[in-house]
Length: 469
Image 1 (tube, helix red, strand yellow):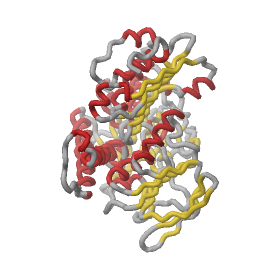
Image 2 (cartoon, one colour):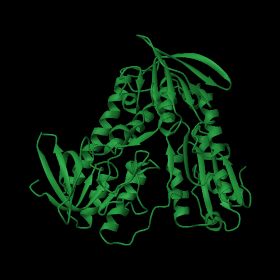
Image 3 (cartoon, one colour):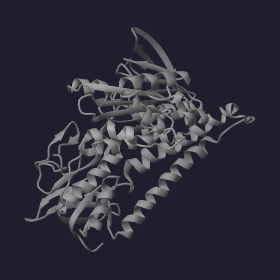
Image 4 (spheres, helix red, strand yellow):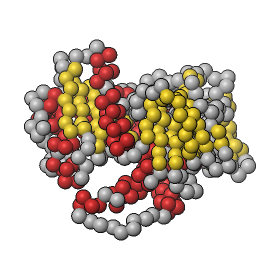
């Protein structure tokens, strides 16, 4: 750690930051990482990874109670909720350690502390780092990448209190399974927690201010998701307004207005999932040319800020707030710094995945947005009920929907709901990235029997007609 001068310093060790450091090391740049908390960032420690471990457990619980359709019987099924939670934490710990190993292997020094921009020394950027051991160090580099991430947005009256009102952090490490749970916000975070807790046995009410759940998804997919959630026993309230939370020593009550009716509900716990805000405070942006818009750093298409030599990637640089977007930006940004030719990210080619039950995945334009953009569209749909593998798996509820440009055959968007669609969407992502048209997709041979055959059938439905429905 004696070296304090580098080609590049990365502030933040999440899926954007650590990937940037690893790629920089591959390109023979001297690079260091400054991380204030845990390597792997929110994604690995308090987001993507631990939630998927919890959701896996809830899927198992659901399957155990649905074994009758497969000819099995399990008497008195039960689970140890704290073991479910502790396994999730163990998975995160293992992977966080793995990130540390990768950085060590790449000979990337990691400074454990809080970094702050501290001007220049004439030629290089300076970074003041307050180390966790109480010491401080000044680092210098020609280039800096800010990858400080984001945190849960809090609204007045919905501040996490560690007991009744939870953010995603508290929701990941509950003391016990709440009997009655209110989830505010039906984006990916809220929907995944609602799905986990409902499948573990909680009575879940999912509230959304927009007129439908998963409001960024295609409207048809949102409607199917709502039907599936309600079939599972979730109460869904859209176009909803919340009154003030009233806490007793045991529970929380709140008046909710939806569908022209007001009703008071009582819950054991509340999860607030109303978005995120960028971590832009206390990192020395004051006095620089860096512009912050609604808590996020403004960048150009190559992640450059208004301050020469300073870049920003990932959640702190704004939507879409996805780990894979951050990692891709990291590689693109570092390669640009290294003088390589790079292509800016096209956000319409970034897949979105929600790991609720049933899963939801999409890429590109929704049908409505394609039409609003002036495209004449051809739309194809194929339901899982026509797919042999889905029926054999006991997962017949699902749909694949594709949107094409009627004039050119370009795949404008793809939208999926059902089992394993988060693993399948990448096929359509490759098609969009490779600028494939319906001609190539129709000629593509999909293996049988797989759920992915539904992707082919949806393409055929948009043109020649699906064969199996």
